[in-house]
Image (cartoon, rainbow, N blue to C red; front, side):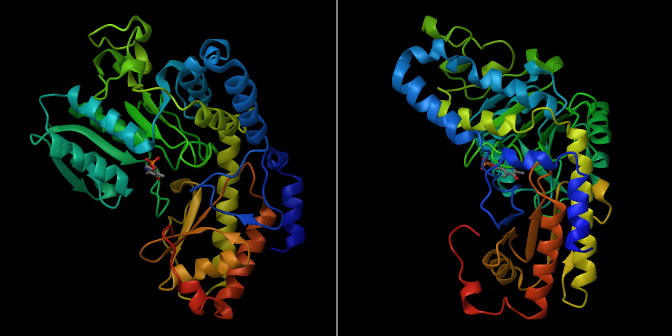
Amino acid sequence: MTLDEAAALDAADPLAPCRTRFQLPPGLIYLDGNSLGALPSATAGHLADVVTRQWGGDLIGSWNKHGWIDAPVRIAAKIAPLIGARENEVILADSTSICLFKALSAAIAANPSRSTILVQADDFPTDHYVAQGLVHLLPRLRLRTVAPNCIAESVDEDTAVILLSQVDYRSSARHDMRPINQAAQRKGALTLWDLSHSAGAIAVDCGGDECDLAVGCGYKYLNGGPGAPAFVFAAERLHAQLHSPLPGWMGHDEPFSFLADFSPARGMSQFLTGTPSILALAALESGIDTFSGVSMGAIEVKSRRLSQLFVELVEEQCSGQDLRLVSPREPERRGSHVSFAHDEGFAIMQALIARQVVGDYRAPDVIRFGFAPLYNSFEDIVTAATILAEILQRREWDQPRFRERARVT
Ligand SMILES: *Cc1c(COP(=O)(O)O)cnc(C)c1O
């Protein structure tokens, strides 16, 4: 495909105008929105308003006057339609890891006669670390790790909860959630989905697919800014059975009665612990607002077209270069990123970044390219594939400067 052909696809793309909702450096091809979403154009102004007018001008009164106290619930309600949830089934809090701890503990406590946490091999490390930490805290629990393709048949009478990423952070392989939720239900287990690489990238239907619990990340496809608060979802039918393992005054039914004993707020608010980070929530709100008026169905359609075009161009232009597709070949079996393995993956990604094509590298040998349908274009795809092919053909990556590793890779 030529750049002109790609430009024609962009001209006909109904989501193309959404690119102006973001502030991207000119000339940069940003294919890493799955690690850190791009800066929305509205964020700086909105944050300046919250800082200067609200915090600076109205000070403590802002908790009521500007509704700060309701922000974790109010902004979470904007995520609900993106993941097929009801507004009262989502809350914003903490980081994904802490939300995982809260949701996993609550699921285990709701299923007290069982002791197994089922996880999939090679899932995102923090998910495993949180589960390991919980087993350490409650030695009656055990962790069982199975291959991603045999989750449903591995659920048994001792399974309390299945903890899984829907879209694998490395390979992009995607689970169909409904059959796993139904297998869990049949055996009396609960499911806890990590939607970090799904929310804002593909059409997720927590309600229709009968998910029990889920968490997800605010700073990837939701564009909430570095370290943005995360979200927790719990199906309404479970609310009465779930209890937060980290009660705090913000999760109390009446925080300002200053009562001696904890009495949980109804619904998802009990999953709050301490005072919410209002500045971080303000940035996240601008991030979520970049989805306004756009259906997740349309986003997923474009995501598949972008990722499929990239796979085809890379395989065509880079054949014979030892680059191996590690993502499923069928777009409906992937999330919104595509990964290739190469022994020199790290250096290749550094060479790409030096040429203004930003993806990322995941040890031991994977280069990842994330496609954010709100701001990535078909031209981005064609240019990125061409530059990757040039780097491989000319061995541009083979330089000492591309082997230096910083703390964050
Ligand atoms: C990015 C990511 C997280 C992030 O966790 P934080 O606690 O927000 O740093 C968690 N799980 C998965 C699967 C992720 O991809």
